[in-house]
Length: 282
Image 1 (cartoon, helix red, strand yellow):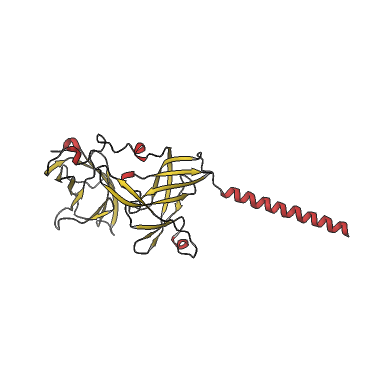
Image 2: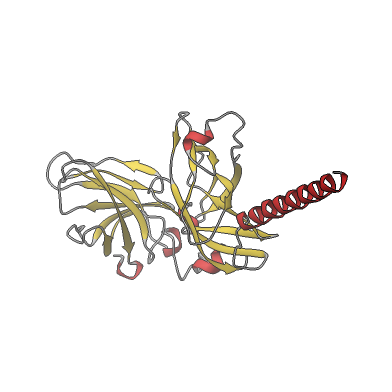
């Protein structure tokens, strides 16, 4: 009988050890292999919404850090209107004990030399090239669900070097063109959407010191607002095709804009780019 108890005890120990080993294997499988060595990279950070994205100065790029196989990307946002992020759903973000991502204050420099303070966040990245949940909390205290994806890591820590920099020859700002105050014109190219919309070119430019304002006239009367660099602009006319006055941060490089159209069954925001040709300025 004593021998039988001993055998049972040994069998129990072996089974317990096997269970621990299996648990250990499961935990190891949950640690994703980043697929790239430890180090610092410039990576692309894309979201599912035009109102939530990396600051325009950085063209969807952030600094990805890989350490001990774990990945974190630091992204500078458009403003301070997003006060917290949560790596998961908005429902989980509001549960007791949820660890929210706190903002840091980043200083960004735009191609025209203007600087601004915005919020930046260190976002855990579970895997490259795969969508994951990232909820955000706005200044009005409401949570929103979003999907984001991180991709295309390039070794280094200089975003400007990856996107081509903000040098004078590549993206000359209005002040750098030496334009006098007053009205000028410049050829403008519209891209994006279905391709059916257009804007009048050349467009009128109003120069006042370092400020350059473009008068954008659409081929349709159904645009009720535009968004440039997170700022909303209303039409300046009430009749005829929609006309807006928007800032021009730089020339010879695509400026991301969003335009809301009421031509469909319900209002719909469409992403476009406008490129102002510095060589055509008159």
